[in-house]
Image (cartoon, rainbow, N blue to C red; front, side, top):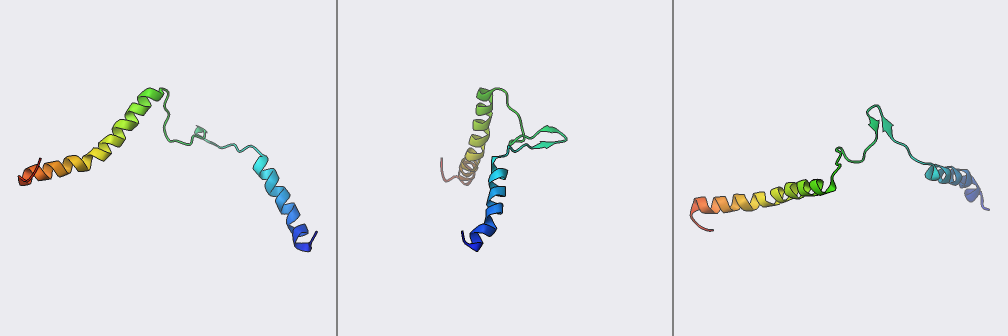
Length: 75
């Protein structure tokens, strides 16, 4: 082994042991969640997400249609 490889050997072992250890996140508010909300029923959650995303996508189209109608030039 070279001198450089021998110098990095303890570091690699420490990193390897750190990666294999289970990671636990906790806070004073309970178990750590990756999303800031909780959903129990996936169907209603999917409907709500779709309504939220579609309303955001439709807003510019509705605004453009309103402006065209107001100007008397379109749909």
